[in-house]
Length: 187
Image (cartoon, rainbow, N blue to C red):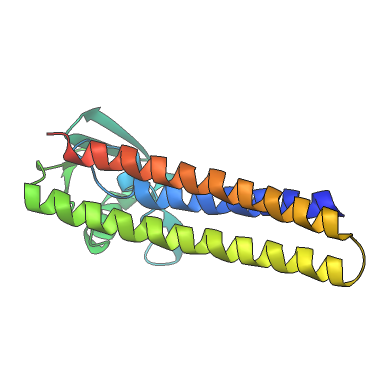
């Protein structure tokens, strides 16, 4: 039962970490990366299907400034173009035959600072989720202690273990933020 608390905490924190990774991957750095557009929801086939772009096309980068989107079904190329424009990413796709080309303009210093600020906000939201997971784990430990399922020594050991795990995940979040910030500041 006690190891269930630890495993549940680790599992929940890993999911939070995955969400944060996905979230900050959408923040544009100076390089073209499929993560910038792959989760954009596209209203395809006359609006009857709403799907993520990665489910409708292959996405690749030909160079650090250019993304290429190749639809699996060429008939929806204009719907993909409209979906990317409507996503308010600041990206402007251009239909080039059977594919879409997105050229990324270089980031201004002001825009880089705005993106860093947005990234810090996303990381802070992630840390809030981590603190919530910590709170719930500590409540479960307290509940088991009150129900006499665990003794005082086990309660203290579990609380220390949960705190160690929380500290590890918080450090991972900080490291991800530092790496992303370095990418954003590169010219």
